[in-house]
Amino acid sequence: MTNSSVGFPQFYQIQQILDRFLDTIRKWVQAATVIAIDHQGTAVTNEQFKQLQKENRRLREELDILKRAAVLLAKRWIFIAAERPLFL
Image (cartoon, rainbow, N blue to C red; front, side, top):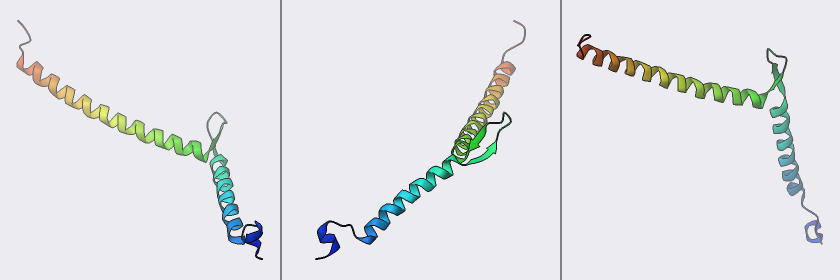
């Protein structure tokens, strides 16, 4: 009679369960690790830093779009102003 037939999990099954458990704990610790202190003295975790980087990237993209739109609108306004006389 083997251990698995009695209901005992095999060694590699236990190892897989523990590996997943340890990986989860490692991820939690990494996400909660303080990597910096901001100008207000608040701790910034790795996860918060990644979120700030993502938001910063999105805001830079939005700013770039707005700058391009401003240039296009300015060109259009100059073109329209050049076609119309200043005095009626």
